[in-house]
Length: 171
Image 1 (cartoon, rainbow, N blue to C red):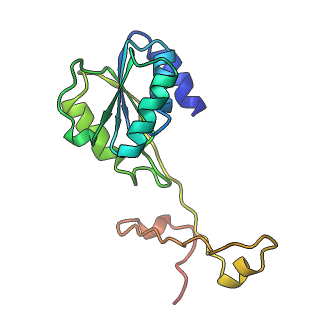
Image 2 (image 1 turned 180 degrees about the vertical axis):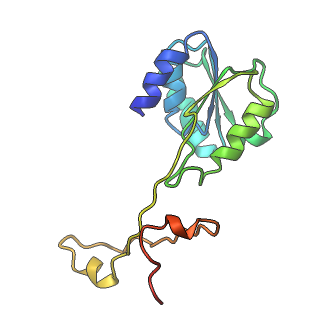
Image 3 (image 1 turned 90 degrees about the vertical axis):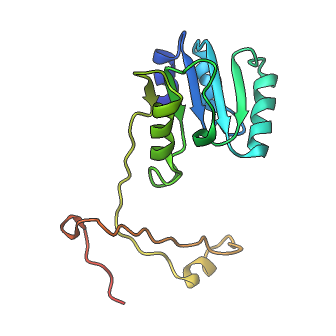
């Protein structure tokens, strides 16, 4: 968030900004507006988060700069002014798991001004092999856990075997 805020301080002044997945607090949209953006279009697909974002913008008195729009960016018709700055935080735990690459590419193709800048401009995920604790571990914790967190497996079918850091566990 600090890196995004620093980037917006440098880039947003006088620009039209598009915020993909603004969320209920419209955090990046607010940062862009406070950094001097002339207009911010804040898109949010979740209806409840969209309403919360509208309340946030109104409470901060920024409705003259920020317009909160409900819907998916990939279904958004052309905006009244093509933004020259794209901001988002739709990366997820693994970069891109929330569809960022598709959304950003679509925004560049359909919604943004030619040569528009994106923050972030890129992302990457680093992985390390690990094992998930057994149920006995969770039961032994001093503060009870109602249910252990779900384990997740990341499947990378085209990942080169020579790049692995440890052998796969035997079944």
